[in-house]
Image (spheres, rainbow, N blue to C red):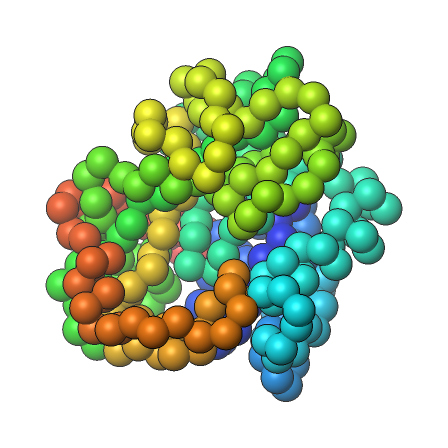
Length: 259
């Protein structure tokens, strides 16, 4: 089995190594990283992982479609069907897959992506600022442990390659046969899953971090649309800054890696 991650990064210099180290420790075999900086940087930042990661420079955002989909199209054409990849997760650098029952992602896949299930929709759980106001050098998963209680219906899909047809959007995909399902075995037909179950797996979404970090990231623009959006960044920070309960699963997992 050879599960991989495909992702795109811009202005993620301070966060990228933690993301890579965490998901390789989780059992992903390889990461395809699209470097969206105007001047390439992630190859040098991640040189110690060169046998586990491929960095593809994809500068600027002036394409006929959103740069995130340019990256996904390139991944499909050049890598998906010409390698030993078996399963794919397309996630962002501020998203961390958390396993509650299994020790690694291959064990999870062996139990849940079976039969007519071709993919599992993993629901977001937004993590807030945990009351922090200043950026520090601590890892993201260590700094932020407070999150929303019920989660968010949006999913990202971990899927089997064999019957994959295309990405509908950055959240869900279509297959020639079979379905995307939840860990409760319900069929998911779009980018949302309202029957949220965090007992087995979740996708920690560290969207806001501290206010200054949120401002910095939002000012880069979005990879999944063309052009800029008009938003009140400070007001949106308040929307995503959810600190209802403490969740230490990613915290504990990453501490085992680094200590």
